[in-house]
Amino acid sequence: LANAKNDQARAKAEELKQKAATKAADAATQLDAAKAAAQPKRDAVAATKEAAKATAARKADAVKAATDAKLAGEPVSVYISRSTQKLYVRRNTHKPAPDGGGEVFDTSIEVPVTIRNPEQPIGTHIFTAMAKSATGLRWSVVTIENGDEARNALDRITIPQDVWDRIGPTALPRSSIIISDEPLSAETNYRTEFVAVLSDQPQGGFITRKPTAPAMIASDDGWDNGGNGFGFFYQRDPYVQPANPRRQRGQYQYYQSTQPMQGSWW
Image (cartoon, rainbow, N blue to C red):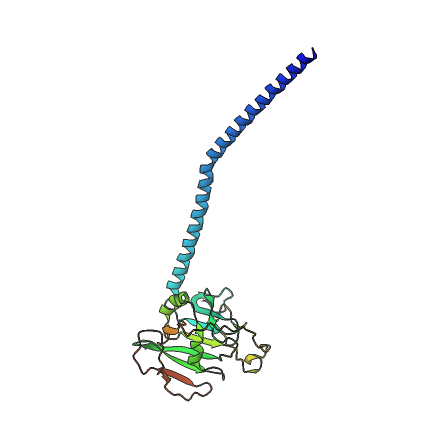
């Protein structure tokens, strides 16, 4: 009798086990079917997200292109700082400032640059495009401080090609470039081009400004005298000399070449 009861219990347990296994198999089948049914929806969601990203990227590119096209007729102002190793661009949008104080300047271009011998002063140099010429633009330069020579200052700077591709073709008379040892002045804002601070003047020439501490910048010995992007200004020419080689503080120089040059900024 006891053996019979045990056999019945085992049979019952085996039956329950088989039923549970069958239910588990059915549940797994249903789960797989549900996953398969949901996969197209997940794929559609992923595709929608990717499409949204692509649309946003195209929109950003379109806005960038539209901005560049709108500003193409505006003189470009460039500021290059040895202290921050950056190049800044300003172009007038002619949009009224929100506070009514003048017009807003475009500030969308701010990129790092490479400066050879960054631990050495570069001086303050202001290049101004005076007029168009057969080879590009005729530039004047004013050197304010006793830093490096203006042409040497240009030669020390390497600018990313994509930046030149954006601003180079739009250079017009009244465009300007400021090269400075100083960082971008706090007096520069969305309503201004650039406010240049003088390194050799007490407090930079501003009564409210503290003197700038000497910049501690690591030197890069990787300079190989390769192209630095300033081919937009002039063609490298060992015979180029200032029209007046005796530079005095704050004196204009007009660079002239003794050899024919291809069309360029310089």
